[in-house]
Image 1 (cartoon, chains in turn green, purple):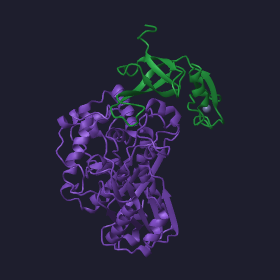
Image 2 (tube, rainbow over the protein chains, first blue to last red; image 1 turned 90 degrees about the vertical axis):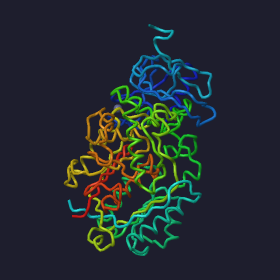
Image 3 (spheres, chains in turn blue, green; image 1 turned 90 degrees about the horizontal axis):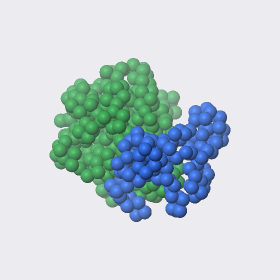
Image 4 (tube, rainbow over the protein chains, first blue to last red; image 1 turned 120 degrees about the horizontal axis):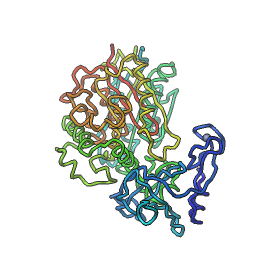
Length: 124
Length: 380
Ligand SMILES: [Zn+2]
């Protein structure tokens, strides 16, 4: 699936995800046909607020790849706008269901979005 | 329903670190299965291969020139569909005798299911359909996918480590009754609880072990099957339901909707209700899948899988013995095929100390982006 818009967005410091332009369902990563309504080329790119909640998290204790030394968490975050994405957490103790906020590391290669607990630093 | 196809031969190699090619192992299993069926290679007119490197070389080497040849991609989720295809080819008269042949040398090749490599699916060792969204975060392995599902299940339903530990410890006890099983040392719940995490919340003992091995089955039409040396094991029904859209992330329902659909399909088509199932062979690449499968098939309610397995229901002698061979967690990971062989052996009454007394109906089920189930019966 074509996620260049997402990756280019991160390089600009924006969290770009997509909804279906036909039925408004989350559409990320964007398929060529929406599985919900059947509409063609559904990607309607939006800039997400960065707010969401932690859907699930797993912590790698095995190093599979040298660029990702264990331990580290891998998270699934559901954004308030609906789309879900894989990411990681600033605090691996973030509870599932807890509110999180995106922080974009635009200078990483590839660029990344990392989530921190909402209660930490930002709004209470 | 009158089953059109039946298993008349099974063949297995040793499992483990064997230093042999997938095709070599598949070929050994094929010859063993033909021998078990007392059939010659020239009688095979349908060939279905799974994970072998070259169906062409395998056929050429073993003198098979079928009228129907199918080669399936390496994912374990294809095992149920393979049987569905083979049974269909026999039912519609395309073939009279089908060899289903599987070979795996991933242990010898050093597969880790997580350290990159080619291919877009779990068995190809990348992860998901859009690796650009997974790789930057170190999301590499199918085990991590299962860990994300378990963490979500624990959050929603309170599933505990001790409950999940019943899966691995129960299957280990089953393996101790199976001389062919690879992991047979004692494992208590305490051993399980102190096992190191791989991708938490999964522990080492929640993971199957990557192995080499070959498995083959020979199937023929039911009327011909009755002339073979072993009691035929009819394929009563097979069904599949995919969840391929959005499959890069765990499904909200732990595949319950698709599991219910295939479970209903095979019981309806066979005329045997779920209560008729004497044993379940469940695709246990990772132990949480056992909970998800039991829930989806309706043995317990959504979220109740942990409590359901915790007190012996899935053990030999329990309400629904599961993975009586030790399963992929303890017998060995042959991508479902060793579980299928166990179903056949149970229905033949060949399982010795781990025999389910009087087994007449055994179900295979796999929870994955292609959910599948196959119902096997004893011949009436
Ligand atoms: Zn749509």
